[in-house]
Image (cartoon, rainbow, N blue to C red):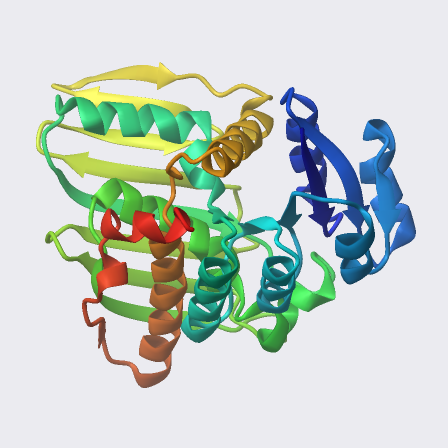
Length: 342
């Protein structure tokens, strides 16, 4: 039996908890949050203990693994502490707020012989899995171009205050929501990023960017355009993939649609349970890694997303494109071994 803890009883904690309840060899043993009532709300249905201090939880809950679901800048210290205590970790995206912190997390887990997986939920959502299957079939040919558009809300009072702190969140709408767009666009595009151009907006009087546009060229020549808009007239979350022999439109509100030869067909119909299913599949993947398997999403890929967001900020500040130097971690396949420690 794998005894699992959760740090952070925020927006997605109940998805993690419910997923643990569906896996026979996993027990949700403890939930930690600075707000006792929030921890109790997540823990109560599963009979888990609650804590206000994650180090106390590490010492006293007899855990095997922990899910880190906290403000982004806290990920580093929590992963380092988990590694010291011999705990495997599933870290919510973004992996960290700097590439240097990502590297420290990787090294600590390698040295302690624990597994680390990053929660890039896009790779487990049913409508995105339908896209993955379509692209893998080869029937649409190569991906040529991607357009990704997602709305959000960064008006004051619309989210917890830490999201408006660059130090704690690592940025604004692009680090948070744009990270999802980068994740799926790089995944579907099939290669790491070669160059980045970006522009951002700071609206509503908040200290972080509220909107942004990112243009990417991947190392295989695929062009990607990402737009994140706050407080738009209509809620939108969709990615359009242009291939040699057709297009794919995908999102949680519309499902997955394919357009070929003037005809549109639906490959996946959205369901209310799709988000919960995604978190369940993600936790299943984490448990598979603890049993010696390979993660669906490499640590190198998650690190690269942080690198690209930071390059986007650099481009927005300078007004110039930023070229990323290739490294061993830019290879999504080669980087998989980083999650397969020891």
